[in-house]
Image (cartoon, rainbow, N blue to C red):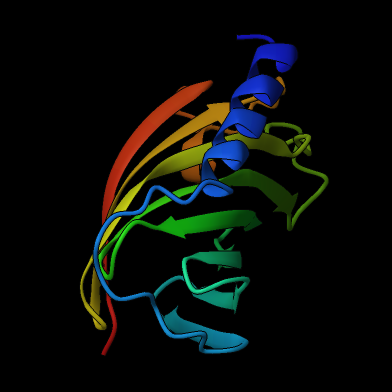
Length: 172
């Protein structure tokens, strides 16, 4: 899939978000700007994993989000950021679409086997379901639009340009 087709798909997805399909149900309350963050260390190898999510409701059924994940590993640091729009179909179901970038930074630039890789850029879209305010499930597709060697979630063994994921998020 070339860049032109990817851009067309992205803008078609954005067009879907601008439509009101009229499903029954109460509209979501306009909650205002929200910030969530989470982080934890892994003491064995000096790793740290953290994230933050900035959410802003545009209307009662459309929300813009900025999500960033920061991971430190023994040889590198990784930052994955996405900007997306969510269109709520009712109180629980939503569609989302956006763009994602992932950067890898070597901690030891002198290692010849770990040369600095260019960032990975991809278009994301999918369907989500909020079971309750503490548990969310999503089915997501991620299409890479550049030729970066970084694989999905920073793994070189997970090939791109297409990855499909199922994920759940538990808040506690």
